[in-house]
Amino acid sequence: MSSSLSTRLKYVSLGVLVVQTTSLVLTMRYSRTLKEDGPRYLASSAVVSAELLKILACTLLVFREHSKYVRALNQVLKEEIVNKPMETMKLAVPAGIYTLQNNLLYVALSNLDAATYQVTYQLKILTTALFSVTMLGKRLGCNQWLSLLILMAGVALVQWPAESADASQQTSLSAGFQFVGLMAVLTACFSSGFAGVYFEKILKETKQSVWVRNIQLGLFGFVFGLIGMLMYDGQRVRESGMFQGYNKITFTVVVLQALGGLVIAAVIKYADNILKGFATSLSIIMSTLISYFLLEDFNPTSLRETQP
Ligand code: C5P
Image (cartoon, rainbow, N blue to C red; front, top):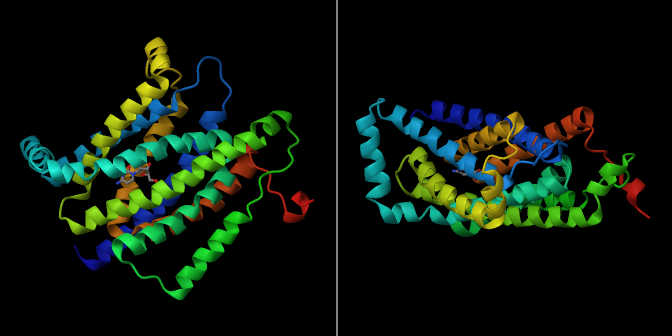
């Protein structure tokens, strides 16, 4: 591939990632706070559906890569996935971690507003940098370390929305909820850093196509997600089915999450995890503005307002 094409792919994939991250966070938050009659959809089921959709999409991409022949597709899948069990097994590690993380994301967004969640989740840039240095041997300059320090200070300064005119919002943003949300998001920072760098290592050290790698990742993700869903929500699934409470917004969340898997894989291939982190931080600005002006979900406070 020519270097100008790969530079273009790098920036296009980073741009799509910004839009995808913003839309996912807002739609997910909206879907978890929407008050509706009947049961709310199961987050564990949405994770499984997204994995399934991602596998289907990646299979279509491999199909296209191989001149749209079903026989060629079968052969590639057999050779690369079934006949190389050790290579396939390598993806079980990030898949397990991502399954946990994808579920934590729902916990976080059920307890924190979209903007607070987004800012705190930026700590994953720091964990990603630490894992990139230790696992990939990347070297960071003084300026880059300094940016990471500023990032940490910024996250520490995040003010939780302190006062809300709306009593129901006050309840949902109470300290207990926030603590649960915060723990979920901090755990996700570590899992995101480790799994992302592990996936980058596998992708850049071996020759398999990124879409085949994503199918391997998705297969494990699907199995782990299914186990998680049955363990956590088994009773409810048996009572009202896996797709209970699904509506148009749920489908949008699932499609956006599956799309995210594809875009992130492309970003890791054409750019790297640290750039991915900085690109998604742009979406903070977008989701904060949309959250404030359109969803009225977030009331920014100044430092002075919340200090005793
Ligand atoms: O927040 P973070 O960037 O770590 O999120 C990564 C997301 O992308 C997870 O939902 C993970 O399941 C997904 N992913 C994927 N395929 C990849 C890498 C990540 O679906 N190759």
